[in-house]
Every structure is written in C-alpha cells, then in structure tokens.
Image 1 (cartoon, rainbow, N blue to C red):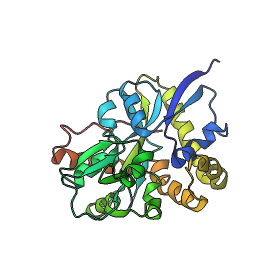
Image 2: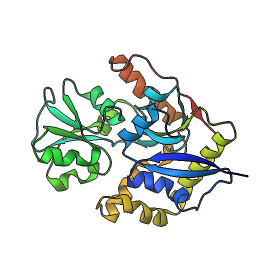
Image 3: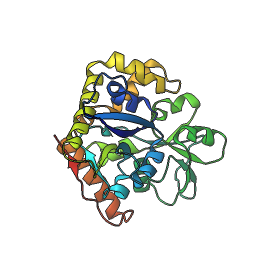
Image 4: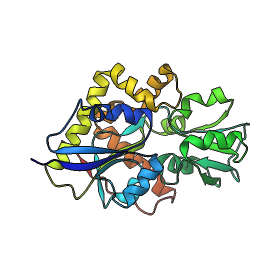
Length: 277
C-alpha cells in the first residue's frame, strides 16, 4: 500500500522537538503515512495554517480563531502550563506599559492575546521570538514579551520582570494556561485522521517514557540552554495536557476565548472541534 505523505509543522524549540522525537527518529511510525517535518517559528506556522498549507501542524491557541474552518484540534500535543507562562521584561522597571513599545512574537500568538488581556494601550512591535531579548537590550523597544526558554533565562541577561502572565492567569482561574495546539486539516479522511492522532500521541508517550533519549535530541534545538534548564523547560510544557486535553484543557481554551470576547478583543467565540480517539 502506498503511503500518504503529510507535512507536519512544528517549531524549532526543545519542547516540540521532544514531542516529535519518536516520529523523527522512526521510533513511532505509521503503515499509512510518511510525515515530512516542516520546522518554522510558531507565527510562521500560524500564517501557513491560514492558507491550509500543512496537513497537520502546531499552532497558537490564538491562531485557531483564524483557521477553525480549515482545521480540527487534536486532543494531544497541546502546550499548557499552570502557574507559569509568557513574561514581559525590560532593561529597567516601569510601572505601566501604556504608550510603551513591546516586542511581541507575532500578533497571532497566544502570548500576544494574553498580553492584551492583562495590559492596555501598549504599542506592539512584531519581532521573531528569538530576537526579542536582543531588541530590548539594544534599546529598540521598551519591553519584550518572551516565550519559550526566555522565561527561564531572562535574569541571566539582566532583565527586569514586568509582568508574569502565567501567575496572573493562575490568580483568576485554576485552569491551565493554554498556549499551543496541534491541529489536523479537515479534509483528511476518516481513518487517516485517527492514525495521525495515534502517531502523535504515541510519540509524546514515547518521549515521556524515554526522557533521557528524547531530551538528548531536544537539546539540539536548545539554543545554548544548559541541560538542566532544557529539561526544566521541556517538562514545563510537555505534561498531562499534552497527553490529552481532557476537560480541564478544553475548559482552559473556553476560558481564554471567553475572556477575550468579554474584553472585546475577539468578535465571537470559536466552536471547539476536538478530535479524540
């Protein structure tokens, strides 16, 4: 039987690399599908999803608003955290972001949506996520919205913490903070859709059961992080909600979109269509 080739998009980050290690290394495979890995930053993947270019891909939870008519949410592969998340930093402490320029990793990212929930009247400047700290250091922007490992390493570069969005979220709800999702294009036929889900889930479970092996691979995408920092970062975002969204993961998405709707940031709440086993 001839296999179907599917493009699988994910970001060049240690947590995504950890999740997809078993697929990339052939530890988990399919008799029906060959996956072609497309590795790009999350804002680029959000934009590609808007054109339905990839059969399955990581996107921002915020990005789902723009692609819900083209993609379904996979019940595994989500990036969610509890008590931590994106942060805003600056060279010097300021009391208010009003009128301040803030480097953001893309306006389709969940981090940007969250910042709009908790701060008003700032001036967003879109910057590739891995260049944000450099822009802040150079004085080209007043502050930076950090995702990925910058949440753990910002103090090493002498930054002041202005906002911890993960802590602010946890103060208002016991639900995890939703950040990223894996989605599957709606035109994938029945049978192949559940096969994609199976392979994704088994890859995640393989990594969690073989952490040393998967972390060794993931650290190739660690951008100079120490092994200890890399492991801490990966396991912050590959967790129980990554295995399965469950009721709390789905509830977290509903809470996010409800908050954004009530504040007038989004015009309508999306219909959550989750593909389960």
